[in-house]
Image (cartoon, rainbow over all chains, first blue to last red; front, side, top):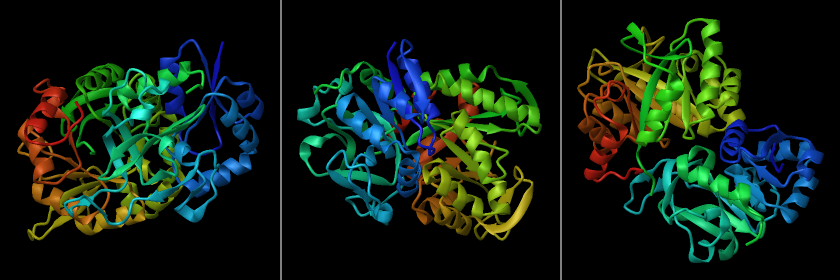
Amino acid sequence: METIAIVDYGMGNLRSVAKAFAHVAPEQRVLITADAREIANAERVVLPGQAAMPESMVALNASGLREVLLEASKTRPFFGVCLGLQMLFETTEEGATDALGYLPGHCVRFPSPHRDHDGSTLKVPHMGWNAVHIPAHARAHPCWAGLDDGSAFYFAHSFYAVPDTAETLVGSANYPDPICAAAARGNIFAVQFHPEKSAAAGLRVLKNFSTWNGAF
Amino acid sequence: MLCKRIIPCLDIKDGRVVKGVNFVGLRDAGDPVEVAKRYNDQGADELCFLDITASIEGRGLLFDLIERVASQVFIPLTVGGGVKTAEDLRPLLNAGADKVSINTAGVNDPSIFNKASHFYGAQCVVAAIDAKKKSSGDGWEVFVHGGRTATGKDAIAWAREVADRGAGEILLTSMDRDGAKIGFDLELTRAVADAVSVPVIASGGVGNLQHLVDGVLKGRADAVLAASIFHYGEHTVGEAKAMMRAAGIRVRL
């Protein structure tokens, strides 16, 4: 039986992600774990996240899991969700915290006030369902299998990642300009939206990840 | 671009969905999982559960209910009612709630918004504001304890304060309109929506689908909440979305 390890570093709500994986991958073991050995032994690793980056990085560093996560990020299907995507980049504006640095780029906050192209105010957090556009180079990514370009997913965030390289960006949402909705490199795939809260489209992404071998 | 959201609201008592007018003549309206699934199938963008349980036993049943719904319905769930301290968010979030709404406790101790936002993130902290037109006609006053207690607070100023303190969203209910089925208080909705940078959910007064359209186009709400028009089978969420789309509003279909 294969295992999906959902990394518990003491922050945020991991249960929703676990429930959704249990729903789409009933034949797999879904573990919420803070145990380095369990993470090291899992076939797939999920880094979820909510709340604020500085507190989360402090918690992650204190958890002693950085080493096993770095190893996993190089060797097996690795999935980041929301803040779990942002943490994969190098630094964040929020508290200027060093992040994990698996992907080249940094994170920024939506400006305040945040303006639409017509000058009207856009709300922050970016909260609700938005269409995700998949760039041509990423359409064949196994984690996007069965999903149409422009499918809607549920977002809830005030910060977003800015990848340094175009090929790292594998999904974008307009608010009003394109922001990073998904990032990937090698065996890493991460989403800014909440697939566990995005109904059928989100469950499909999770299902895809649960069967992905990490190759792209 | 971001879609406007439709949020059916369910009243919960002792772990069951109940229906009634102004909490009088409550009757069982079925298993919460089944009701939640039905709305999910209709295309609801989120669900809101309002716990009107008064007992500790009933509270335990609420956690069980959230747990069961969250295991089978994969859209955002907001839970409100009975939150007294920032620590009260944890068991609700653990059970599967994505957002928790805070009403009376926030007026009693506004620092609950700062604390909750700091620990759990602004995205899961909803400030519920029940507002009523002032008798002077000049603005709206905040009420608590399910609308029974006047606070003397101005609704617009209070909305700004809770957003500044870290609430990620405002659930705004017009007490004048609640249950009246004559539409949202659009003036109130627009005044609050324009006053804060966080999303505003309009609530109270929906009697037909045009009211939902008006809430967005005239009230500038980011989301619209309704109960009875969906509960009694008058309309489906799908019909509401079709109507909103026909009015030029971006919705998730």
